[in-house]
Image: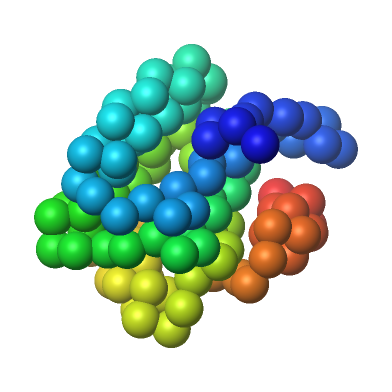
Length: 122
């Protein structure tokens, strides 16, 4: 599976971001720069995003890198779902959502749950 994958399902535009296993700031930075280019190609408030964070490691630096990315994506993303996270990462994610005013994010266990959730929101 590609790290960034665009697809359409039930007439909704999705982008899947696979950050699984990321451990270093450089991995996050390189990935997020590429992801920003993809996101910017879409009209405002048009995207549904899936983010796989399984086995990813967050540090204070990566927290800031992701917060910047979440802020960048805000105008383009209608709803987002994050999966593959443990309790502490959910807590960090919810904090990032509050700080960046991205309250349209949900945290679920699996990719399938993420897609099901996003298919059922308007």
